[in-house]
Length: 438
Ligand SMILES: NC(=O)C1=CN([C@@H]2O[C@H](COP(=O)(O)OP(=O)(O)OC[C@H]3O[C@@H](n4cnc5c(N)ncnc54)[C@H](O)[C@@H]3O)[C@@H](O)[C@H]2O)C=CC1
Ligand SMILES: O=C(O)[C@H]1O[C@H](OP(=O)(O)OP(=O)(O)OC[C@H]2O[C@@H](n3ccc(=O)[nH]c3=O)[C@H](O)[C@@H]2O)[C@H](O)[C@@H](O)[C@@H]1O
Image 1 (spheres, rainbow, N blue to C red):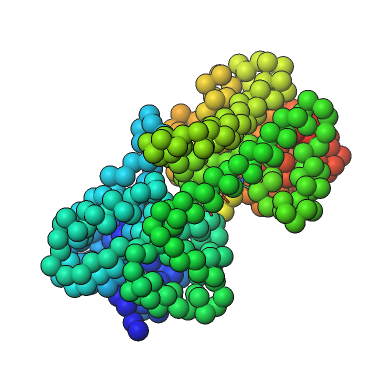
Image 2 (cartoon, rainbow, N blue to C red):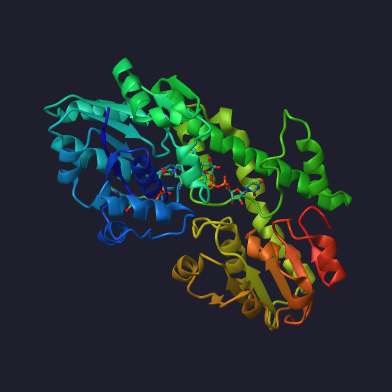
């Protein structure tokens, strides 16, 4: 059966989801409140960097299968299935998630519906949200049957197209067989290709999502706690992670110690989860996540401390090259970027900081306008007293340290991602410092 699909909110998640739904063969209408974003997407141009997305989006915009609008009237008239992909950022000065975008999308859509519809939540939300929204939909009393399902999204930025088309699982939080059947039909090409489906209630679906992100964050903080011990004992955290990871029950993924996690999801989801547990009177169950967060935030200060040590505790008159601004490689996303956080702290100490990133310069300039931005790695490193490797882009991993050594004032490198080839850098004359591997 061919459904017409809308995607409400066309940021990192929604734009990718819209293009991938078109790839699965559906007619898709993306809705966003930002006219400039909508105009750009309608021209086949993705207003952010996500590998593989732009050609896919352009193909379907050109074929007429995919278009974008700012109009909820159009969306209500067009869609059978409406995917909610708006943001749920951390509220200013609080741990809890800001639910105003999700609420407003539902309030805008539901009263306008004139054809039966399934609304499918994909945004990451506090447990209990789907139930609350379902009640609200009933209160809004649309003239047609409108149901809600919750199907959280697990895509990673940088791999979003692959993850959306071939997810490692689909989770359908539903209240009726009708909703399950419809979702199974919509995702039939994905299910037929082998992705497993977990069908459950709303609360379980919501908890799977925050549970997954909290688990990943915990794994990273665990190895970073080990890095702290490695620093005090002279052990090597990378070898430790390799050895731990050989145990299939543990696994090597997400055991890379370094600067810690950042981004638009892990940090805020962990905090929103703790806030929600508190509201539910279950705060105690998640107190360990406070420590996960605290370990993670210590990583940023650790890099500043190691830099101070390398510079002999002299900031004034010192040049610091920062390689990386994105929160991780293969994205231009700088939300809660550990690299920019470190760059900002060092700048405040009075050193001259020069930042370079292959894709995130535009976003970084907008959010941290007082930092200096370089045109290239060489430009950033010109006359530097220390080079900080803070985002693990392939371009940085492939640098020739012998060439770079000729550009800097003093060959000091701090590998915040523990992935430069230490022997090669040392052979080229660099004083190399990793994190948890001295
Ligand atoms: N970025 C990612 O890879 C993933 C994100 N998520 C979750 O998906 C949600 C969205 O995240 P991102 O796409 O990263 O955020 P984003 O900030 O990039 O995109 C949100 C979009 O929603 C639009 N918007 C806000 N209110 C709207 C409304 N009432 N109607 C229509 N559009 C509206 C904004 O203009 C923006 O374009 C969050 O809950 C996030 O936690 C989940 C998995 C992966
Ligand atoms: O909810 C979300 O939005 C998404 O959040 C994360 O995806 P993402 O934020 O794109 O990035 P990750 O690849 O998970 O990396 C997160 C952070 O952890 C860091 N990290 C990752 C792995 C590791 O071993 N060590 C480590 O420090 C990365 O550098 C990055 O800063 C999850 O991996 C996705 O499954 C989820 O859908």
